[in-house]
Amino acid sequence: MATKERKAISQFIEKHFLHFNAASLVDAAKAYEKHLEEGGKMMITLAGAMSTAELGIILAEMIRKDKVQIITCTGANLEEDIMNLVAHNHYIRVPHYRDLTPQDEWALLEKGLNRVTDTCIPEEEAFRKLQKNIYKQWKTAQDKGERYFPHEYMYKMVLSGDLVNEYEIDPKNSWMLAAAEKNLPIIVPGWEDSTMGNIFASYCIKEELTPSVMKSGIEYMMRLTDWYKKNSAGKGVGFFQVGGGIAGDFPICVVPMMYQDLGWRDVPFWSYFCQISDSTTSYGSYSGAVPNEKITWGKLGIDTPKFIIESDASIVAPLIFAWLLDM
Image (tube, rainbow, N blue to C red; front, side, top):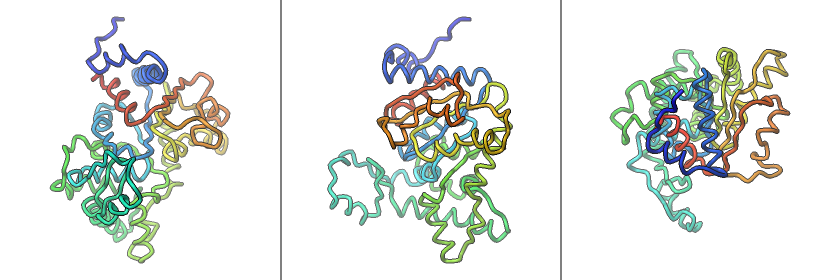
């Protein structure tokens, strides 16, 4: 079979990314592509601040082109993509962030600017704008005796049209909007550890809302279990992990949970695994759990294609996605 001619970015990657982490990037991208071509499905997990890093510019296209079938992310990534959608013009970049003194940081706080590495999120334009609109979704559900997952409330908000007049970027660059339009399954473990999670808790403390209006992390694991069972036949489900932490730790455990705790012996392992992390492998750190170690936990099989790319995810992920989109 003739090899297809690739476009400019893919050609550059194939020509110059020949060794070390660069070669691992190419190997992981080709294996991801092969996995999809053979009928497999892929989960992408998002940790850190990838939404504030504007990964949505290319991730939204990955969603539209069916290169990802389910996403697991932190509550921060869920909300920060929408914050960028409605408040981008008010963001402030701080390229010299490594030189900031504690006094400089305090000055940013007093201006209502919450810093994420080199980018400051404006509290009034981003947090409060979302708060007003998401509260309406929470309160409506409570009044109707309904309850939903955190991402489902976000979907309702962006699909309602209430935010359209607030858009400050091209909506095609919002991965949450692309996901909502496809009703893409999303898993959000530890959602309480987010700005909207904290705001929701404050309403519960004030007794304006009840905690039960929000479905829980346990219910997310149950939802993921059901999804995995229905989608792991054939080539199976791959696991593309951007960063570490709960976004990766939570969903990968669904396989050993089904096998060991539920006794479902016919559950297949994750059929592809790639981890992008710039953490140095060491005892006690998240990145100490290299792919082979995951075999001992019943998450990956002996023959599962496994890749580690030790580099900055804000560099690596867009390049791999560019390969998959043949850019």
